Length: 302
Image (cartoon, rainbow, N blue to C red; front, side):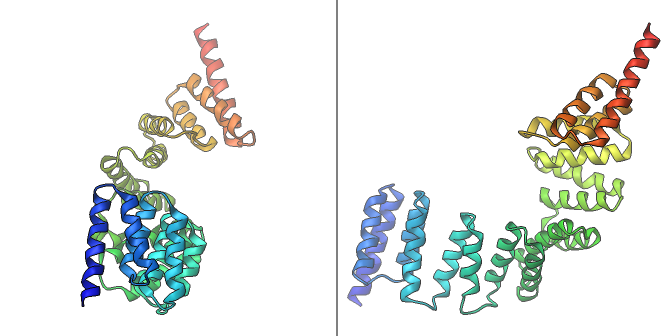
């Protein structure tokens, strides 16, 4: 009883040192407890978080690994280590750790497996785990987050109707989440339902005006709907927001300008598109049309 009290007292002191920014003092206390073999999982977790918060990722990983070596069936530490891997984009190591859990049907582990495979662009595998998670988990917020990932996966797999279906399931909780609204827009766009795509993309921009991707999709949707001035405006906003836009984006911007007789601007944008991708046939053909329009204007002006 006395030893247990002393252990908790030392942990409390270590946490106080952490709060004061005295990290070395806290590390020393935690490490002493570990060296004395009196530490339990909480000490390892606290020290691991402290290492991670001070950008010492490898010591944090090694520490949790050392605990697992002594306590092979520790689900708590295996999950903690897998999350540490996930936070540091070490997807394959996270997958290996999660696959070695004593309980392979632990819902949160299944969700993490789906996420890791998604980040590796292994969409079919990710889909299997997110579907499994949605069956295992009760109706929690995380279940609806799984539906968002499933919708994104179906877009990647070009199953746009399924993407809409999963997005609608997520909408129960995430109706005001910008990315879900963008998912609806992208799926409807690919289904040719441009009027349906417009409202959610506008909502996505309103919720998160800093998200560049929403402006690009808005530009594409307005272009399809024939509102060329709004298409131009959104493409320009997107281009201003990213380091480098694609040849396709410049082509679509040029197309919007051409449709409202801004031949000079269209020509300039087609030129940029061709520089970015010399094999962009749409841009090459568009440049010819813009040049013809520009030369026609000069003739009529003359």
